[in-house]
Length: 287
Image (cartoon, rainbow, N blue to C red; front, side, top):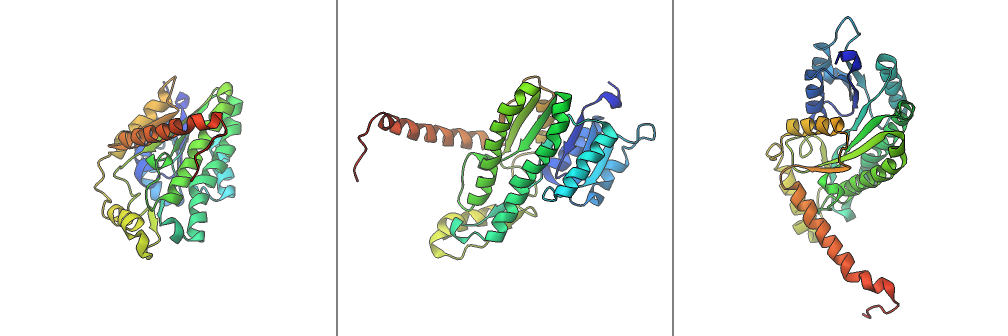
């Protein structure tokens, strides 16, 4: 397959973590790749060595803050101008925020949702017309184990990832008849900057939350760089998903991630089962 016939990937958040590893792997394998970051200067080393004079380069590095609608429109337009199509969109950009629910800061919460949720929604909307016209494409949304399980201090982050999981299910129901696929990839603990540079925290001051939210924040802060998961292997899994004829709708990655989600879902289903019969009648337990 010549480079001109290889799929075109559009990946957000390529300066660190999963986005960086995925960008490196795509470039090494000769895919056409649009790699983006809020400051594309941080991507110069990735894009520069893989440009070719004959086709203008297989790699296009772009400035993209997913909360900036003008930059979203410009990035999609530049991609179409260079490659004429978008085959795989990887919504990876985002970050973590920790706080006890009661101690959450309004501005921080809204900024989190602008990046993790509304920015992802906006970019997906901008790419869908391209995929719809092609009658093909694959949207891969990077969520989290927190998209299934809410941990102490992660209420707002978990809410942002739950939102993307639900959005993705509805999106798939709409676009699957058009030949467009949708997958959610939910990482567990990986060696990325999530617990370091990419994590914001509102310190715990209310004593009643010290043993829950406070303890969780302290443990996560000391965990950066020590996580068991290898982000390069996660990147390879994403390529495998995109190349599959029947990709998974939801994929949990990482050591302990699947066990955590499975335990949570089984507990939730057991609780639903316990209350099921009450929905069939009018007799409810009295306090």
